[in-house]
Every structure is written in C-alpha cells, then in structure tokens.
Length: 301
Image (cartoon, rainbow, N blue to C red; front, side, top):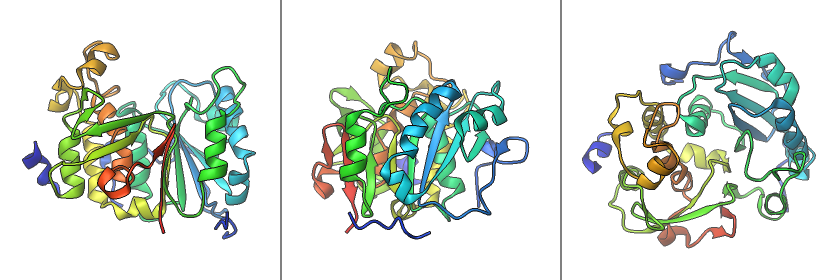
C-alpha cells in the first residue's frame, strides 16, 4: 500500500474588503444558482454539504451564524452543494438565503464535497473557509437553529486572524498509525506517507465530523495533486478495490450494513480522520496536542 501511494507524488483582518476531475463538473448554468463575481469579496466562505435537510431548518441555524460577530466582521459568503437530485435549486437558494447553490452527483458524501470545493477554488480560496454539513453537530437538535455553547465560545475565543485550522466537529479521535482508540483505519498509514514522505511513527489527533475552518495558506500549502488523488479515491466507482476493504470493520458492519458504495463509501470515515492531518494540525511530535475538549486549533505565527 505504501508503494501504491508513493506513486502519486483580537486584531482581526476582517476590514479588508483549473484543472478539475471531469467526474464532477457540476458548476454550469444547469446545475448552479447564483454568482458573486460582481460583489465585494467576503473574508469567510461557509461551504455546506447538503442532502436531505429541510431548507427552513438550514436557514434557522444559518441565520444564527450570520448574526455572530465573526461573520459580521469578516463578511460571509454561503455556498451550498446539494447531492439531492429531487430538490429544486432555486427553492433551496431562496429558502436558505444562500449566495450560491450547486447540484453535484450523489457520490463521496461530505468529503467529496469538501475536496470538490478545494480543487475548484485552489488558486483563489477565501482567506478562511468553513466546511459544514446541512445539520452540523454544533446546532442544538431541538433549538430552532440555536448554536451550542462550545461552538459559540470557539468562534469568539479561538477563531482569529492567525487561525490555520480549527476543527469544529465536536468529537476528537486519537490515532497512532491507523489505530484510533482500538479501531483500525489501515489506509491512514499510506496517507501519512503521502503527506509526510516518511513512514508513520507518531500519534495524531483527528477532529471528526468533516466540519472545520481552514485558512487559505494551509489549503495552498498542500499540493493540488494530493487533493485530486484523494478526490479520485472518495468518488471511486463500485468496482474499485476501496469498496472491498473490510476495515474499519466496526463502522462497515455497524453503520453500513457491511456495504461500501459510491454514495456512502467506507473510505469517507478514514478521510474524516485525515483533515487535521492534511492541514498540519494533527501530529503530536510537531504540534503537541492541539485539541481541547470538542475542538482542535492550530495557529500560524
């Protein structure tokens, strides 16, 4: 596996005003609603992976985020990528007051969406990008979109101009060369080798949930080819060997009925534990333990 991978080689800045895999060329007149090219550029993009959540429900928590001081200071653009082919794009845009809505094929889950956005904006990402699911973990389940305290505190006390990566999944996993608290994720090892050009030898911390903020500099510090390779893996067709993998078995058997499919790939659970690694906020020997309770935070100097 290693050989296989080696073949792929509070002063805030808020005041300042491609080659893409053909599988998901979804941004065109038929599948995209909204265009911000003629607007002043916000400093923060909120990118939402959507499938089934009711637009009214999404707007409830979105409005709460919009009213937060960080969003007011930065200016925030909201982009929704939906994988629901039955939904009306204009209704989704109007119902959520999103700036852009895009339709994508239903493959790769939220990891595919994250990588799609990174690849297509790699040359010109926003200063900060926040990735979230349509029902994020930091929204109270029965609170009409109310944001939970730990999220609000993180955005007030942690998020700042030198934020490099801020994990907002509300859950943290500790892994050592593919062993995450006793659960095996063997593909973490070749990913480590791909990123570090070395054999795995260090504990790493993973912010789960596919919900995080990452800076422009950390996105562009990673080669575009790495994102493309991961994208090809997470959107692999059913006959790909990835879907035959048995580990992590507790997830495949417990949550996926023993089947990995393009719309629900087992590899997505490995990628979920890769984001903080990908953006340099993971390795104990480099950054210590960047995680505190429900969040992981790394800063640039």
